[in-house]
Length: 391
Image (cartoon, rainbow, N blue to C red; front, side):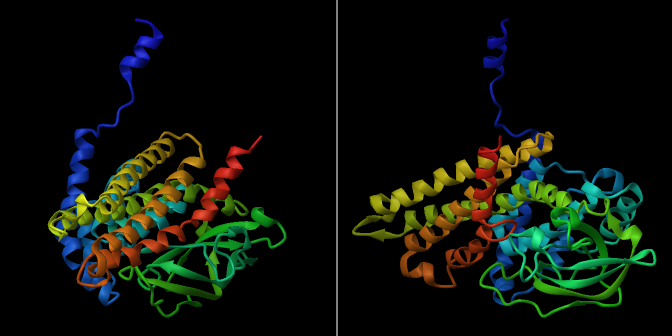
């Protein structure tokens, strides 16, 4: 058989394995039973889904990315994305809260030494079931990660941290934080360093929870560090390597964020299919009116395309192939298409879509943040342009 014949016969596989299908069903059933029925209540009261988090932990869909060596399941990013879509379908506010431990743990997974991994991943997250939050964003440094101003000054063998982080998910409930600081203010991106900082250290305080437009079930607050003394052994990686670690984290986390947007997109699509089949206007179901039918068809196209971009990005990262464009493609497209789908869903529902007792109103509020957090849609396009024109 020729090389060409082998390639043609091999093809490209899009079928999930039996194990992946089981994981997908597990997450879908969990969302249907534990998330979707209570999503509106959690949203209305901006209630943190602690009980749901611990149920997910018992099931194995929390802390998924922690390697088996430290008591986790060692899931691939692709597997995280399968779960992320299902949880996002149920409620992206709840799914964001559940997945934040994955994000907060990533600097430790990617950059910590063995002793640190055993303690922070194994003992604190897996054995004790604690919460961790990820701290990069500041009031004056969102997309511009290098612009952070939180300082870490070395004094007598330890570091003194001063500064603040804002818009930190699960901050009010976190037991510790992975925090990016400036250890050398004159070194640009080479002056950033990551530390693990325990919540109960003197000088650490968490501000009032933000009152948000959407994803209200996810806790979002400010963290303040005032002369917080941190031992050198809490440093993740080497001093000055924080920027590179943060960029690695984004490459690993963006497919998962995009998968939740894909889940919301699918929810908008399915709600519209159901509603447009039952609702009649001018004597026929409204999907038979081309203006409505085409909106729903566009949602279906967007869903299939966004999911494939997410799967590709996850597969590339899992395969160790460095391609920053792929997570950027997935994050930007999924966020933008989910936003369009949620907006169109409200239009399909008409006046009912504007009412809280119908599900699409919440989708429209929840979806907006996908174009902002984990790198705005504009930043994703900047990454794509940079990589396209790299020589």
